Length: 171
Image (cartoon, rainbow, N blue to C red; front, top):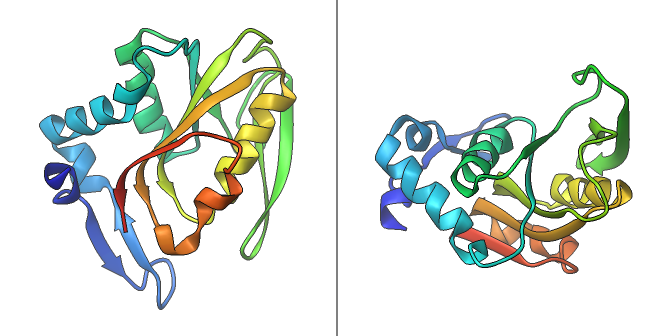
């Protein structure tokens, strides 16, 4: 994990004063470190009956699509409103300062799907919980959630108490 941790850059006061942003850009720029991260994200689930991988816009697309490719599974993007061209199912959720919506095509999942949800960061857990709700609203089962980084002090894992959570790095 030291190799992955060394590729996470702290950006102070972004996007606002007092926040230390965990920048994954150096990680995705280094193919060898990225490969280690992707393999570590999927490793606990290799013997599970995962049928699809989902990732949230936008950085979840990076890690989720790579995990899906490595596992030979479909990748399902969970998008912001207005980005998908077909009929969608959506879920609204609250953020620290406002609200947001996630959408997926109505035919993205079916009742037999067992989904691995992937994102780069687990912070307060709102987006991850909404993603799980959207997947389940569409009839699929969330098998587990996996993150590159977990900010333990924000207690996002508590919102995901009904799900298995796997995080590579803890801050």
